[in-house]
Image 1 (spheres, protein in one colour):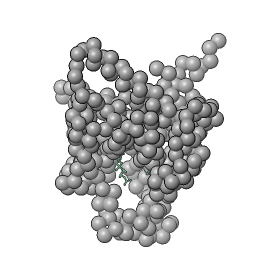
Image 2: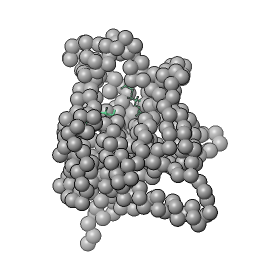
Image 3: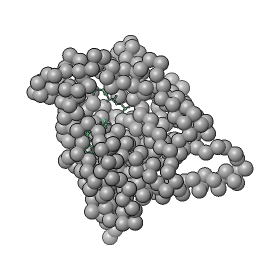
Image 4: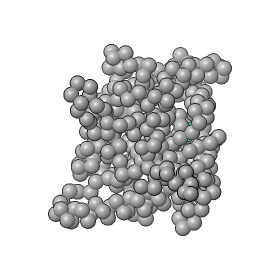
Amino acid sequence: MERKDNFTPYIKHDRAEWAELRSSTPMTVTEEDLKELKGLNEVLNLDEVEDIYLPLSRLLYLHAKASRELYESRNEFLKSNVKKVPYVIGIAGSVAVGKSTFARVLQTLISRWPSSPKVELLTTDGFLYPNAVLKDRGLMNKKGFPESYNIGKLLHVLTELKSGVQEVAAPVYSHITYDIVPGEMQRIESPDILIVEGINVLQPPKVSEGNQVNQLAVSDFFDFSLYVDAAERNIFHWYVERFKILKDTAFRHKDSYFRKYAGVEDEEAFEIAKDIWDRINKVNLYENILPTRYRADLILYKGDNHHVDHIMVRKI
Ligand SMILES: Nc1ncnc2c1ncn2[C@@H]1O[C@H](COP(=O)(O)OP(=O)(O)O)[C@@H](O)[C@H]1O
Ligand SMILES: CC(C)(COP(=O)(O)O)[C@@H](O)C(=O)NCCC(=O)O
C-alpha cells in the first residue's frame, strides 16, 4: 500500500537530507558577509548558511534559470519584444518569524550567482495605510491584517515591474515612527530578481462583496514563494526578545512611536510585548497568515534558536 504522505503535495526533507543537496554548490559566504547579514540579535552562523540557505539558493537558481529560458522561448514564439522582467520571489510568515533576516540572507546569496544578478528587496509594510487612515477606519489595532494594506497599490507596482517597466517607486514605512514616511519613496530600478517580503503576501484575492469582483492576488506575480514557519511559542519568544532589544535601542530615538517604553525593565517589556502579541500579531497569525501556508512552493520550518528543522518543497 502507498504511504499516506505520498498524497501530500510536498516532499519533506529533514535537515540532514537537505544539507546533502548542497554537495555541488560552492560556499560563497564569508564571515565578513555574515556580519553584514546579521539582524538585531541573531545567532545566524555559517553552518546554518551552509546546510540550509546554500541548497535553497541553488534550487532557486535552477528555477530562475529555467523560468528565464521558458520566458525567452515564449517571447520568440509570440514575436514579443517585452523587455526583461524580474524573477519574483515571495516570502511570507508571521511577524517576528525572521522574514526580513531571511530575505537579506537570500539577497546576498543570490547576488553571488554566476551572472551576479541585481537583487532588490520590497517589503509590504510600505503599503500599509498611514496611521491617520488606520485611525479613521478603526484599524490601529489591526496593523498587519489584510485590511490594513493598500493592496491595490502593491498590485500596481508589481504589475508595472512584470510588464517591463524598468523603474518603479514604492512607499516607505518607518519602524521608528510606526507610520508611512510622508513623501519618501523607495526606487526599484531594473532588478533581475525581486524579493517581496511580508506577512500577507500569500493572501488569496479579495472578493468584493457586492459585485463579486475578483482582484488579482499579490502571489499571482510570484515565480517562487516561500513560507517561514515555526511554533507559535517560539515566534512569540523571538518577538519578545526583539522588543527587549528595541526598548534599549530604537525606542530611545526622539521620533519613536514607542518612546514611552524606552528603557523599561525587562519584566515590564515582557508584559507590554505579550499584550501586543496577544491582541494583534497572534490573532493575525491564526486568522490570516497561517491559513496561507500551503499556498507556498516551499515551507521552511524553524525550531529553537531559528535552526531550520525541515523543509517542505512542492512536488508540482
Ligand atoms: N536565522 C536567524 N538566526 C538568529 N536570529 C534570527 C534569525 N532570523 C531572525 N532572527 C532574529 O529574530 C527576530 C525576528 O526576525 P526578523 O527578521 O526581524 O523578523 P520578521 O521580519 O519576520 O518580523 C530578530 O530579532 C532577528 O534578529
Ligand atoms: C509592520 C508589520 C505589520 C509587519 O508588516 P509587513 O512588513 O510584514 O508587511 C508589523 O511589524 C507590526 O508592526 N505589527 C503591528 C503590531 C506590532 O507593533 O507588533
